[in-house]
Image (tube, rainbow, N blue to C red; front, side, top):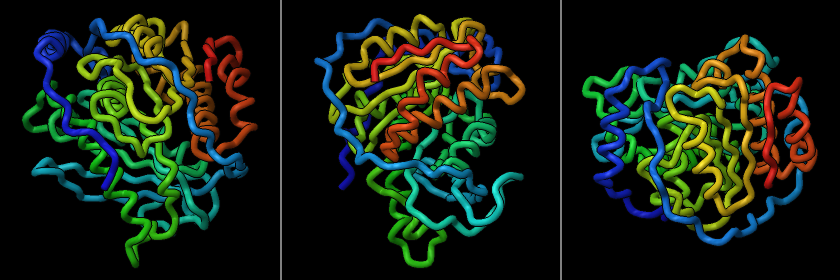
Length: 326
């Protein structure tokens, strides 16, 4: 059975805070619309179990894409999966493309409020091209296609992500599946933006999924899921714009400060909630993509060169500051 805790409780104070935030204007399509709440001190720092040193793929892959129609307890969870594919790299992802040879780590990605996985394709396809299978569910009540939106439902999403991880990892042993024998089922990370960042933190706190080896929190906070980190140590990377108009930089930094494990924070002095983080054409976009990709290479492939590149790459052209406690 997967090692994860029970469904997280709905905290009254957190719901009140989310209600206020949810009624606020949303400047970006993927905004979380939240502010942070005080949290209890984190437990003592622990060291992460080392990943066997190795090397991440040196050359990019072509990218394939497929859809999974999943549901958990009646909650529809369609999942977009981007994966390394055979063929020439570059170009647009190819539906149904044959998977590349090898075993690839899995990254579960959570979108923000009113978002969809496709909104993040510019980043997620880059991760796939670097050698990761990226599984991104569309949540039933917080996506841009939700027929009955409910911001409170963010607190149910960590359990959704754990379910998606279980189903995706099962593909590795499913005869005839395009990803059979292609997944590194012992190397899994979670990542998310805004409300998806809250979802991601929940997977390391109240809804701890111990299969997760690392986390990436993009413009997120600990609202509703707290900072009681539990289970085996898992390195965390926070990415936050200091001019974030939706989830304040201070709230993201407060959550980061409570992480008791190896961690780093990429701060973008001119970054807002989403444009500089996730949209091509912004000068900081490449910094975010390169830093998050090298973090995944280090945590999931054990690539020492990727670890050494992190501080220098993150500070490219003075666009970002990198607090390195990894």
